[in-house]
Length: 238
Image 1 (tube, one colour):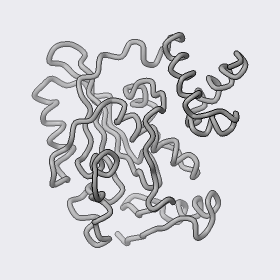
Image 2 (tube, rainbow, N blue to C red):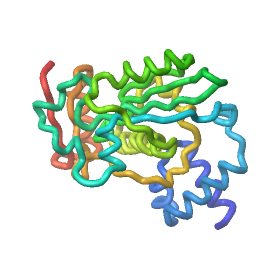
Image 3 (cartoon, rainbow, N blue to C red):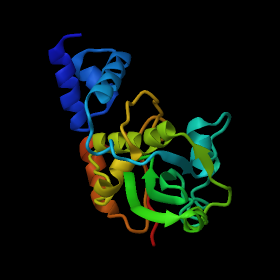
Image 4 (tube, rainbow, N blue to C red):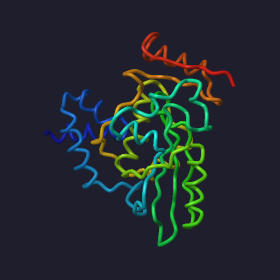
């Protein structure tokens, strides 16, 4: 691969273009792009991530873990529209990802990400929050309280794939991540994009209206980016 191509890959990734889109744009195989990104991450210091504390653990709600990484039927696909808003945040197409890093023994910095993996990407994010072991346990209990099932522990690579993959997907639809994502993005670390997961529902965007959404604006954006008939939606009055 020519140095000019490596520079172009680095430039596009800095603009948060997904590896798969970079490959398509440059006429390369996705595996080639992933290999170059991994090489560049090892060679080039990243001021946003070099000083990050080591990862302690990552979590996601059980339904999202099953949807992306489990076998058999997806839990959300079995959820009816009427049931979708039961249990508060346990709505269809939503994931809550938590990344915890250990600052020192018994002290952690944590961030959480509310992910709409069917359409909008990062809808909300909290952190970075520095807590001791007791408060960390309470934080996890509180944030996953709306879900009936216990959260599942996942790898950092899986957490990145859900959160950052959803950001990339949403951007193709015309949606930006929550404004506070600038404060929590770096705690996800450097993502090489090698773990690919599918977003949307049944091969296209599915907008499930939330209580704080500007649904009219979101629907108009989808009409402009993908066109009528190329997305599904459920709007619910609140």
